Image (tube, rainbow, N blue to C red; front, side, top):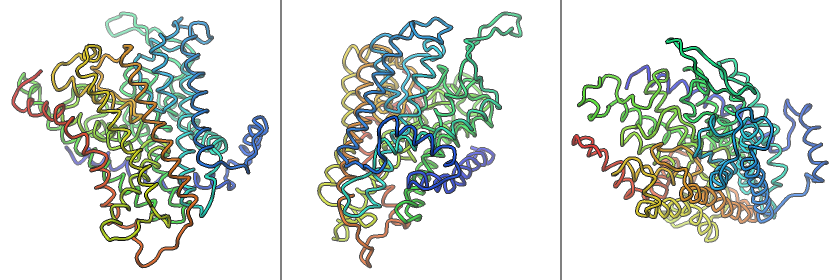
Length: 569
């Protein structure tokens, strides 16, 4: 680790914090229905969509109707994307002549992009037509992110309102998230990416002459536009197979900075917007502090593990000065690789600028653990905020038990119904991750996908289901996941990780909205102070991570000690 490396990390995180307040205020104004500087242009467009849909903006929904709208909208998106992928060979903008995807791969991919996971069991440049990339995948990058934002705002309203029966209108929230937030930022970022060298073309490829005089065909396409929303919407699915390690997705150090800032910006701003909307900005900053501490610790752990190097490589004469550079891009270096890896897994982004399977055992364990914590650091766009609020509810419940008072959070009493629903949501991840991992680690059709036997093979499976259930999308690339078993079960894990979590969260929102908002008293536990920040960090680590420790001990921890002993598998 070097001072310069930490300086680079600090530069990016300070930029994210600097954007949190202005962008958070803008988001708060948008969802409060207030006028913004884009209103003269976008209000007529928004009103036109409502007229076409026959939608009245003053008709709000209770939590059941809101949840049904989310599920129906996501189902429609899945059907449309599945059809595009299966019929790809018959659709336009297919200069490469790619055939339609197999049923199991189309099912996995459609579920992946609708759930904001973007798990990719294919190479984008060798599988997807331009039409599939633009009309299929990029559209879902916008809509899945907008869905997460809408749900986060609905949960926020539960704390804003007193004795209310409604939590908003999903169709209005989703439309505003897309029109006012995601689309303008994506246009600006795509233009910046084009200026930095990312292709934006309908040509399939060009022919280059190498230094040896040979001819090489290099794939291109509408990369910049997909890359922009991929990061802003914490989607993560790359145009190219190697994602942000590809020079056409992430050409230089400045583009790498911009990628990380983009993926962190909206999720962090939404946390600030939460504090603004509930009338307690300190609460927003307290939640940002929780995510910042855990993200910084994760980054430091990866940075330390990778700069320490791999004794097995050093034993065969590899220079130890730069640490473990296997699977990394020299143009980014150890520090920005560590930050990108921690950010993409602390979020639900899943894009990568290095191969996670090539990290040292402990370096690879950290991103896996960050996913298993629940993707709340600061998490996916929208999903990170409502996931963090579930942990906050658990934290105030624990605080209430310690002092013998009825727990409250922002003036809302937390009672048995909210606790049962919160625990239901929390238990989804370990049930799905550990259940599918256990079956895949012993069944022949699961073991067949392992390319590296031993503890690393277990890590590959555990990471895959953690990534799928956490709606992350990154992978230990050694797992051969394009098989009927993995395509199907990973898709099921994505669906459960997304919607089996959303429904109890919206039920919590409905329950809290119906309760009166009580004023603070001298006995109220303050949730915007350092004491609560520490308590919340502890709850996240215990409730989110401790249940995975036995599985981690059998995978990356065993591999780490074997590496120190000079053994390889």
